[in-house]
Image (cartoon, rainbow, N blue to C red):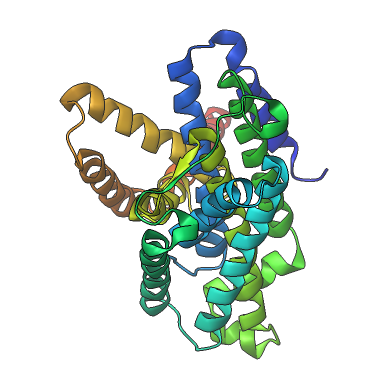
Amino acid sequence: MKGTSSILVVTTLLALVPLVTTSNDTLNFLVMALLVALVGQGWNLLGGYGGQYSFGHAAFFGTGAYATAILQLRYGMNAWIAFGFAIAAGALVGAIIGALSFRSGLKGSYFALVTLAFAEVLRIIASVTPVTGAGVGLLVKLDLRPEAFQFQSRLPFYLIALALVAISMIVVRLIEDSRFGAYLVAVRENEEAAKALGVNVVEVKLIAMTISAAITAAGGGFYAQYFLFVDSGIAYGPWISIEALLAPIIGGVGTVFGPLLGALVVKILGEAAKLVTGDAPGLDLVIYGGVLVLVVAFAPRGIVGLVASLRDLMQRLHQTATVEDKRG
């Protein structure tokens, strides 16, 4: 498959990690990093490629988490099927919010604030509605069988999270190489020019938001199965919206591998902060904010862009040295 070989190589290498260590702590760290990478990839499609910066991807994450839990608890649905419906529910919420926002002409900071408002509204509704467990939340029944999407160890969860991230990266890569991807980048670069060239700007942004929401909802559904608990603060809280945009911005916004790299960095920084200062409330957000300022100031294209710049610099130095050697 064109353009996906590098994704398959990276995924294969990560799949070999359990051969080196089966520590529960290590696997839990990697699962959480992959979860952030998955949600970050969802944000990256809309924000990185489409230029539509959302502050409220928790709306899709929470919908995926709640849909997975509710369909199992209230309707006795199989967990795997509920997971599929959760992705569809997230996509539907994304399409509705996108239609309301884009057809109203919202963009830039207005769009960002509206998405934040939608996430907050959903959080409040979930915290008072009986079907979502109101303020108590929902506890998924323990059933440690693969057919119930539950396992005796963390290893299957790690492999499933890795597969979800790989699929999301392949989807984004295919979009990147498609005509739709070209339209999406054109909208990001100059919306008016794209419109003048015949691009249906609203439709392009709406499709991007729907796919972005579906990817993010998959992260929410996975979270519900991994922790077997969800409440309004977890599902629709600002934490996941922050990590969803931090990962691609730090790793490289508008790149396929950026969210994965950024998620690993974000999680490593979080763990390092805990080791140094303990579980001080809010300290991880302070560190994330500091790192974000540094990245925006000194590496606006993230780690991927920084690596590319260093590679170009090395190539120029090598070419210069070669020319000087020939001159003698």
